[in-house]
Length: 272
Image 1: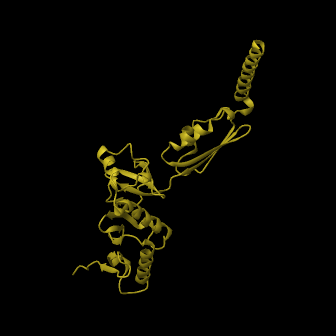
Image 2 (image 1 turned 180 degrees about the vertical axis):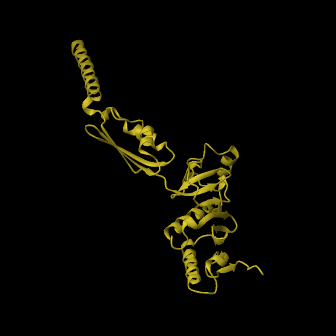
Image 3 (image 1 turned 135 degrees about the horizontal axis):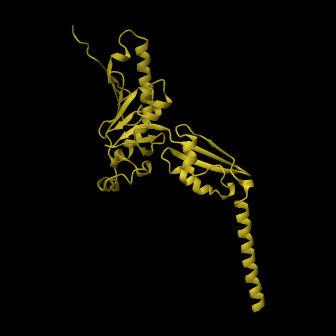
């Protein structure tokens, strides 16, 4: 019995040593050295920066690369929203990434970039784009935690405490309202392109107000039904293009809070 047990233990030990030898032989074999590393999906981030972030380089053994760890390294970069890595045996590696698409700058006292899903993905720095609409008028307590995974380490204890309280329906939707307006404006670019929007001012009482670059014009959107309100705005713009009564540049403000009763105010002409 002892002989059989000893033989079994010895067999397992020998098999383990053999597997370790095979693993070392394969992972150190020059046949599997990385010669081709392809990177796709980059726009803002350079391929060189991607490889540094992933910590992979030609000459490494393709089979020794921990794909899960490489993906985690890539996702740690603030501009990368998704990443996929695949081996191409015997000597290749394919890295595919998806970058965040910035939608706006969120001003909370400190400024952050949000993407087109409404998520905050990084704090604004001097190398980031500045030609984006600014969302202002919100506080930390107006944000849903699932929309701000980047923020917990940055928020003060008072701000974290504020998010712990149950929010009213207005509080929970006010941020989404501002994001929704920008997304609709992007889709209906012929109506009011995001490039024409200087800022989105959010107020818990009156809702969303758009400020454009054209002589600081304001468009009061209120709450909800934004697609219909943008259709009404398009009708107003079409009217200004086809009439001599007044032009778009003469409009000071448009009140669209009630799309069935639109109020248009014109700039007062200076008396000569």
